[in-house]
Image: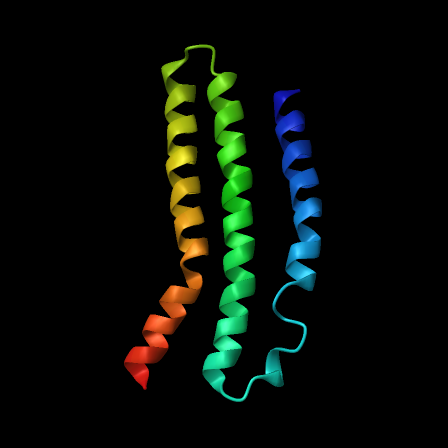
Length: 107
């Protein structure tokens, strides 16, 4: 029962994120004048997707922690999920900076 509840939350969250993925940043990816503009558009869209999924995982980690009922194993799983969600949010929000750094080095 709990797995079905978590699965439905994730599924609804992914359907809510679909307009972000299909409507953000990549309407015309080849409209840029050079390759770095193309990479910037891709980084924006992928970064938004990763940050959104990280936010969903942050919520799932909270649900796992609340439903752990004091079990050390389940609390450990919730903490790992929270750590990975935070790492995903940081990587997603810094995707443009990473691409700008790499294109700055290669020029």
